[in-house]
Length: 104
Ligand code: SF4
Image (cartoon, rainbow, N blue to C red; front, side, top):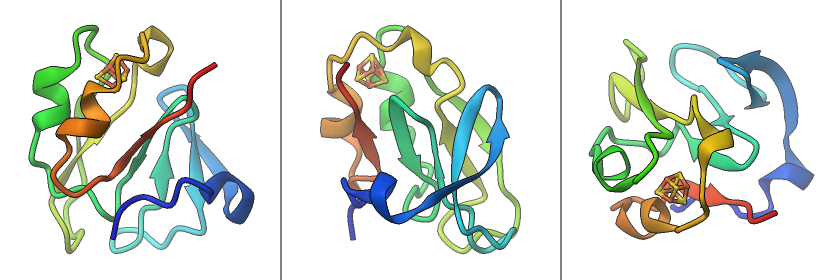
């Protein structure tokens, strides 16, 4: 199931991580919520394919280790989301549709 494009109206910010919000509820290590404000990655969908990291022209994503998570043990974390140029390549490339980019 892809990331819910309406998640901001259904979830709440439960913490900050690397300068971006984490939307929950979360129950680590099995339920990690959604990371990001402009470039949102649903950590509970991410399978660590890495396509987003490969295609992003400005290096928005870095790997973040998530041992014990059922979908994958690392996630593409949007640590540099403020650098996003809204090309949407990551949304298109993600095989599980875990990413939602919010245009300004
Ligand atoms: S929309 Fe483009 S610039 Fe922004 S995070 Fe995705 S691949 Fe990177």
